[in-house]
Image (cartoon, rainbow, N blue to C red):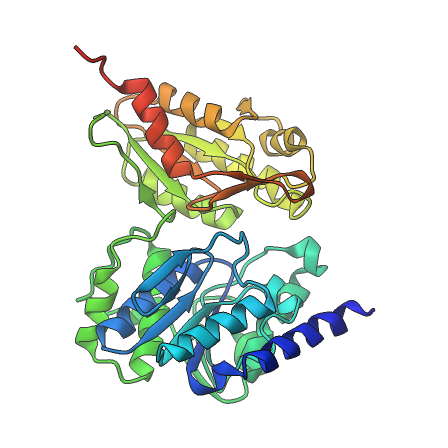
Length: 388
């Protein structure tokens, strides 16, 4: 029972140590099951286009004005002292808006406490971290904490949980729906869900008085987000198929990725590499991932992802279930086999890790990793022409 007090005390101590820096900036918390990182990229680009000094913290990177560094912590919302230090650094650099990716796990450990949220944005909500929170209702309630305190909330009107968040939000509430998206803006990242991410950022920017032209420029400036619907190639090694990396590790996001790509190729032209992030949690999703892959993919390679302290082969078996998938424990070998098996017009889809820099193993071990770098290396190894 002492654990909540411990987390609360650390949150308070860190805020005191850094003199409550969030009070002097407009801090915007972005939360939801998926789309948080991409929404933050849109927000940062829009407000920079409008001439504001901005900072952002996401699972992808720490950015203050034009200086950035990758988030190597394998933690979307870092520990209390790290977050407060980031806010202090942002304040010292003159940041006016700060965009924070806020997770339910972070809220559960009070990492959001003593941050003065100016606004909260909901991207969407579906099942995740169910075992950790003890059910979807608790998971949703954790997400709701920042909506209870922020004076301004931006809500996805297409999400079935709209009513819950609308009712718990005490002050200004703005709801957006897919039909609100302007026709004159070209979202460069494929997928209707990315259009919704852009719309959530657009809705907040419009509320803050950003001009339509700056909003358009900002959204169109985001050509892609690392590890999200990212095509990977090696220019010196032309091949007759495409390779795509995406962070999708939940059934609903994986299916959206496959749906989009299936619309660009003839039937069953996807060669898929999948795993299951987060050993020790969310076991319910593993057979669902396998069923979705069986529905869309010509070939499926099930491999290691982030097993933590769980037996990775058990995870792989639970994903594969009754399906005739190839099970390859070594992620590099699985990617290599997928590339070797690709035919004309295929898309090789590697999901689950995106731009993450580690494979997490037992006892907190970390193996340096980057799906995109491995793909390029294997393309070079497999298809480079011998020197004459």
